[in-house]
Amino acid sequence: MQNAAVPLIGRRGVGDGAVRVSVVLPCLNEAESVGRCVREAISTLAAAGLPGEVVVVDNGSSDTSAEIAAEAGARVVKESRPGYGSALRAGIAAATGDIVVMADADVSYDLARIPDLVRPIIEREADLVLGTRDANGRSMPFLHRFIGTPLLTFLVSRASGDRASSDSQSGFRAFRRDAIASLRLRSTGMEFASEMLIKAARAGWRIADVRTTYRPRVGQSKLSTFRDGWRHLRLIVLLAPDLVLIWPGAAAALLGIVLAIWTLLDPAGIHVGSTSWQPVFFSTIALVVGVQAVLAGSVIAYQSSITAPHRRSAFVGSARFLRCCTVGGLLAAAAGLVIDAALFVLWVRGGPAPSRGPQLASLAQGLIIVGVTALAFGFVTRLVINGRAHEEAMDDLPLEGAA
Image (cartoon, rainbow, N blue to C red):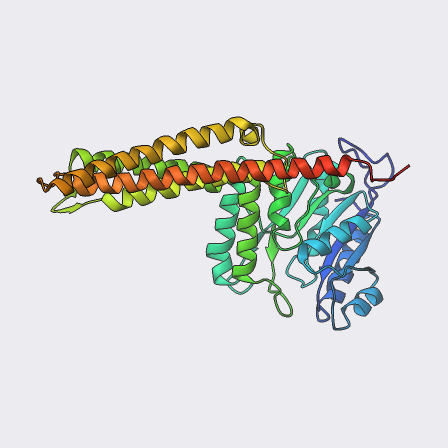
């Protein structure tokens, strides 16, 4: 990038003046590294001819991080609410630049690459640019590099319609400050990174990757592998229940039905070489778990507080959902009870046990559980929706005695 001020010509524009860049660094006890990061960012902006600022968000540090950052030339913002997402949201809100570059204050990201992240936005080639990490064996833990990050990237990509980055967990990003507010990001923890990507992709943003190095961090990592991994997964479930619950659940339910029919047609089970597998119990488990996943995913898709209900899930909020759950639940439970009753009568009469008795008994139990589950989901969902509507109606009523 030339060492001159670059005019911003983005789609939504900020004017014909020089681009102003705000580098936002969340910080929690990074006294060993924050000063170096601030100086690297400031020198990079100066060398690229980009006017701007460095905003360090002190997220409750107990060391001298804030003082060191201020002495290095940063503007320090305090954020009392804990969490990576909380710090970044506060920093973005406090930023004054046309373009925001977010990174970490632990020297893991090469801030000399800031111009490379900013350039595609200035040149109208992208709306969100990520510095995808080229990590070596020392800079990223084994579990994160080969399991956690690839798995989360896969899920985020699927939830984004295959439009997300090849490194969904990179915290080195650039975007327009005025546009990011439209995504209504709400996450407070590490899952902020996934929420931004999923919502940006669904909003039609053009997402670009810039290959960068990933250096060994200085200081102690704040990332909790399992806790933060769960927060990411929970977010993906809320934003994309079809990906995590509905489609896998439908597949499991269909598999359960197919296996149940198979065991009825061939009580000997499925033959694999010289061995055979009798899926009489697994078919019931797959059917029950699958139906529960589909129902739960449908309700989450409608009730999610993070994203507006999808048009396909609007059916859950209607009275027809209760009717379908009621009718379907009663039919399934009744069919299961009829099968159970028939088997009981045969047993009482002392006649020969039917050749497919275990298979029929397993199917009966599965149908009863599925029926009760459908009835419960229908009634509980309807109660919650009606209760919320009642609360909203009461909120609209004038206070007694008000003028």
